[in-house]
Image (cartoon, rainbow, N blue to C red; front, side, top):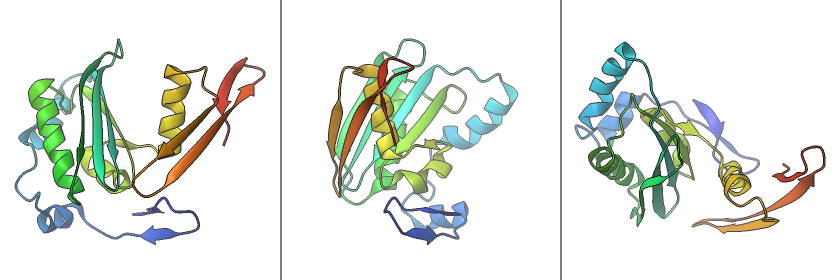
Length: 175
């Protein structure tokens, strides 16, 4: 798999098999049982999205939220330092989301962002969303009156300016 690692002007070539990655981490033998059994069950049943899961796997913390897909009501959320163990903290969060809310492969859509999100997205079946895009979409939806956002992360800072989109008569992030 090849991809940009989030830093301008540099890209990284990665050639890893998922099985090798799982065996080489502390996750070996600890993947939630619902992932494998759920994939088979989900293939047999119609897919009904009940939950939307958002994960931000940053350089120092993991933030997560589960919302009701129809109402956008927040059902579960957490924010914790990962102590350099991003995959383990994500796994802990997924286990807790499954226990508290009931997320599973057949009932949720997952989005992931952050410096650690790109490498974990394919393992989780999540859609990777670049951080500026994720913040911009959230602000446009939840706070359309905002003109700019300053986001301070563990390893960088971002400033996003929203400009009036004349045809739509609303503010939009313009890349």
